[in-house]
Image (cartoon, rainbow, N blue to C red; front, top):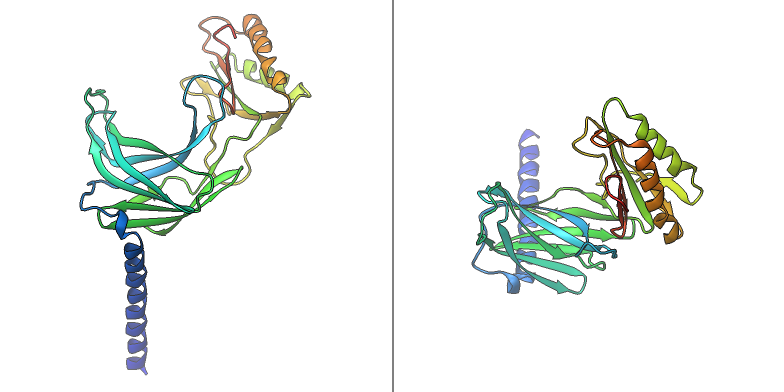
Length: 271
């Protein structure tokens, strides 16, 4: 009986590796036309981002940021890739690490951004003869990745929230002796019937700043939605008046109101 159990275990193990090898061989054959002899000598981390192409008010574009796990001597090393789309499959092929002409002296990973089409449900990463595959789900609320097979890539976040339409973030930092300023302006927002406070429910990376940065007290950011754009625009005057009355110069306080479509108001400038 003991010998039979050993045979069953060995047989199961062989079957498992045979199936795995077969799946990998099938994928390699399916995408062989995209493979090249060249490859890069680093693993890759990736994450989705909604970005703006200028400082103007605009609808954010959904991108995929790719960054090397290798750290290079200049901050602005790049990653050369080719991008293909086959029906609902996005194929990204890594080709080289690009050394910059002018070196930004801080160290950092090599990076690049590629478009992430909204109808994609699968991503294939190719590096030489290596092939990684992820299932992708994109909707108005989230972008989600689930690894099918991977050897050189890592999704930094399984789930990333998208910027809700007609939303904005209240981001505030204070000193230790004037934290009441955060509460006072938050009360102004909460008491305004034009704004509805909300939270990002569940797991996932939040696309807005979750706290301020660089202050003695970095408060938790709060998030609101509005119906009319004009209601958000009126906050420029509200913030100007509040800042002139309650925020002393060099007091270590900052307030930022950042909208989903790149509209921004700050306490330290005249909006």
